[in-house]
Structures are given as structure tokens and as C-alpha cells.
Image (cartoon, rainbow, N blue to C red; front, side):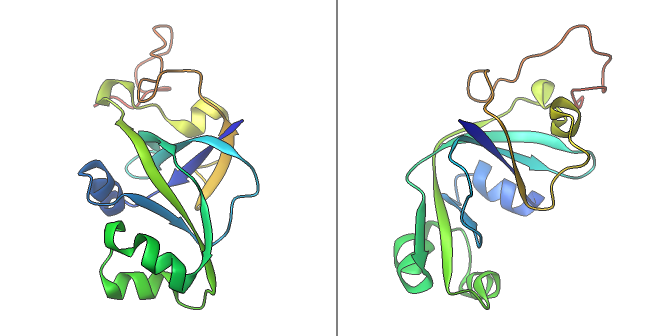
Length: 150
């Protein structure tokens, strides 16, 4: 199985880390199965900041999706309406087991997986073989080469 690498804004990541947002939403349903979701921010450098085990993935019309997930979405009504503007259906992924990556283990996903750049929204990468939230530290890499130093 794969992992889903998502690029998030710092604001959304903060809501997730503070446990104010309990769902991730996508307008496009996933094309592949994934066993873990990796959360990255783009600035100041691409950085893996957290990861979670997803629950059941819901693909619903927006009325059902709002009934199911709006209360724990971390969004205001205006944010919700703006995000889903022009969509008829959406995908919701519940955040089951969240692990925020310690600062000393925050790797650069672009370098780690050999990507051309951090994806615009999401991409699929191989499922990590490390424990949830604990990417390995490679002592042979130069500081800042693979891991973004705190």
C-alpha cells in the first residue's frame, strides 16, 4: 500500500496539530488505496510535519458530507462554502491516529522520495517503514541535506 503526501498551509496544519480539525477534505477522490497520510508544509522549505492513520474514506454528495463532517472540520461556514464552491461531491478522510513529527526528525519529503518538487496538492509515495511520527535519522547525511534542522 501507498501513503498519501499532502501539502497543507501552516494554518490548516496548526488546526490539525491542535486537534481542532479532525478531517482532511479533497475535491478529487483518491485513485489509489493508501495506508498512511503524510502532512507537509512548503515554507520555508518542504518539511514533513505530521502523519496520521486514516479512517474510512467517505465519498459523498456535499449535503451528506456537511452533515457528517462539518462540526469537526475546523472550518467556518464561509470557509466551507468557499472550499466546496462548484463541487457536487467530495471526499472526507478522518484523522484517526495523529503523530506530530519531532523537529529533529522533520525530513524534506522532496529529497527523501526524490520528487521534482513538493506536489501542488497531493501525491502518492511508498508507505513509510518507520513508526508513526518517527522518520529515521540518517547520521551519514549532512545537516540540512535531508532533514530540516529546527
